[in-house]
Length: 218
Image (cartoon, rainbow, N blue to C red; front, side, top):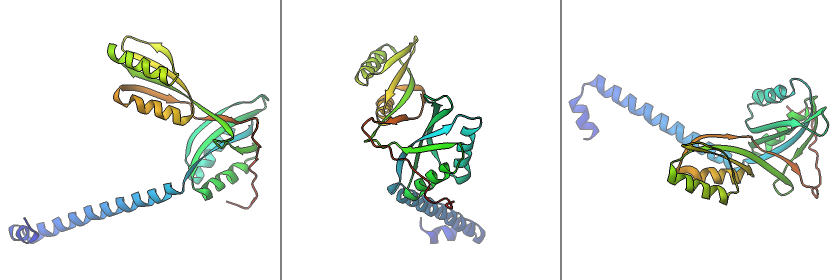
């Protein structure tokens, strides 16, 4: 039925309401499309950066790092922290996404904190980066054997066995863990927990400390 036929069967008020509804829907679709295109354009120039940050092991240092990201609206993909060989110093491993300008600003802002001693980027080629994941999967008798075969391929560990579930431990690179979880998509995954990445430079790699070259940067 065309617009003219609809118009002939409805009063003027109903016709205006229908046009207004159509316009609102069209506007929402255009806004959603524009937002998707903008996101795709941004992701094209974004990359992941893993930072190894040495900080003083003092009360509140983690909160100050988190507040910095909150105030600047930067997103933390993962953050792990633990004491180093020196009990007075902790090492944070922070994973962030962004374009080059955003990543540069993140480094500069972290460097401004008085608790921060050193920042080093962990590149995949020069670093060993690992993550730990625990995955609980609901299984029946047949699925149990299939899951066990998958865990052997990925060199996982079965850390808990129940009548209707298995808990699997997997350590490795984030891409390995992503691939393992993707393999389980045809099974009923009950729970997943991931520690976030941590890592160190390889012994043969040159350490390049990221300095804040522009103290006036905001």
